[in-house]
Image 1: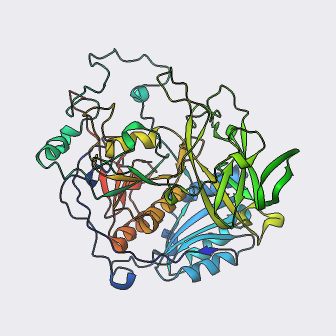
Image 2: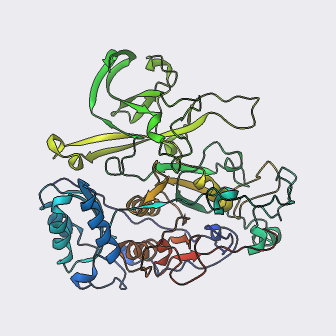
Length: 522
């Protein structure tokens, strides 16, 4: 059986001071006292009494997901990935049922939440879905699909190719921009006045999980909190190393040893010891005109041809990156995952005479024993460790983190709604310009159960044909709130006003759905 169930232990949660503050994001995490909209976490981690009973088999895969399946078949996809919301405590039974389907691979499971992730061959999809639907333990099934990120730039609401609006009369923001301003209108929600009246209620003591395209570790306003503490305290990648086609995840399957070895026709030098090696290529970030901000040029040197060898020491849990591409790992610092020492590397070199930073920050992450079954063939039944090169996909996540918790934007008095709060960044988006519902859900689960966050923000929408919240992910989000006492604040999206225009992600029963407003000033 090829699965990696994770036993999620319940941790004590401190009460976060929260207030409804910023328009799009979870700025409610910071500036006042508001109750988390959850039932009290249940003793011993037992599932809440409000867990929904099993639906009729015909209701468990909605029409939108049935359409996704039909499209996958028509397009000749080899596999589909499904996420299942089951009765908490039943995941072993559900996983066994899906694993019995020929060619199926069961990935992450969270028994306390009733979550099961499985990838099955497209030829066996009906069999797997049918078997799951017949189980009374199964409440809902969602198929993986991508949700495109909104563009946060000022001209994003214009029709492509259309005429631009006339320039406004506002000067560009700078260090002299006051806290009340039209660029970051936290004053319209009362956040600026609240913090002025209660200067210690600025988010300090609160950690916000931001699941998005990744937060820029080098952004000047995201370095320190108002109390001088580190702002970004963890940075992880939520995409699947195999099924999301995210080339920043590198399989560590080639064994080598120092002090010298050959790899891909080149000789490398390394300290004595046993390692595994792979290579990260910048061109994987080229997702076309609507894709990643890098457009294939991670070190910003004007081409898309650069690559860097990675040397993984499984025993020590470290990764060396041959940043200067000289074939010598002895002059590269061993890096651990970000929260284990806050190590940050950089691709490229910054030009001090330019107004932008040319170099790109990155971190590393290690995911052990990933089942290789979705690759098929001789990989079935095998596992491998993967190393991730953690870089942002686009500016959207930094834009969101800034609205939420920036401190001293442009070096002045302009702040996010909760400048004293800390941030955990989780990148759930890949290189085509969007995030999958599976990565968003698993990233949300990881933030709540493993990263010590008090509140989670997700500013990503999406509108299915029937936007009723009757799906697996909505049930899972509600369980996260009930079981762990962590509030989820989710964007209502950029559509509307009108019927069926509230973003699908925000329709879970107890999530806070945050809409946007526009005033004359902004």
